[in-house]
Image (cartoon, rainbow, N blue to C red; front, side, top):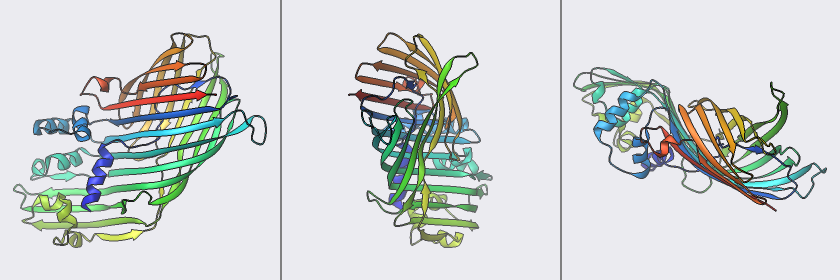
Length: 409
């Protein structure tokens, strides 16, 4: 159990790999008449309430003064969100071949992915970082606390339309690690000197109990549909409907699951016995038995961290110097809200372009992104960030970096 707690902390506070489409502008241009190869990589963390000054110290190390924790606690909202994610992916499209008919061909992709997010109350933050002293003679409410985390790899084969770039990929998934926790009801009540404590818990914790490379096998669909439309100003545009990682994985050796639904009262109880993993789950402490915690191994299918995005694309063949792009993005998870974004794409010359976006939602608040792109005859590249303020200010609520490279032959 101790190793799992450490692992979960790393999952939440460090970058691993997840496919999450950044707000970098995508271009709809000429058809795939050649073979095209893509390498994409990126990482980000984002929150509506945890400033970079705190998050950076968890990721990169450093002492956190109590005053900083107190100030951050005061700034917590009633509902708080945090997510960390990154991705590394390779794709290829074989445009000089045909599959079934001239307009269709095939492609492959492979990558490493992961995702971690949490949804928590102000009291949950207070108990985790400041202990129980702030709640003497009071009740701490940490209900609706949720944590989800996964690491997986996938390799897939797909078909695509060479004229409009629509594609459909079916992927085989290797589930490396998975964890989830949800506290439906959580209340900690204490008297003034903490000599009497009442704990009410209803929830569950489940995780893969194996540190190996593979804990499960599954499948996932990646869907990219391009639709030509005419806007209100009679301008033609292309709308992209994108779905990534829509699938399931079966945990081979099962999930180790703890379930609880009970109330516990104790006098003379030390709070560190409650929050210390060794005490709580150790053989010398009977709190698990007193709370009626049920422990079992369950064979389970688990959902992969999917997302849906609808975007108005940039017209790569347009002669306009400035174009707009915008869209919405949905994460089907309890911790996220729908996100919207709007950006401007400025063509500097035939090879270089600069873009900027404003977005709101998902796991945080407002973000400002900046992106730079290069387009050559065979080689193209893009780099950027969704959190320009996060690069220069510790008071921002996230950081991100994205890189894309493509080669057409």
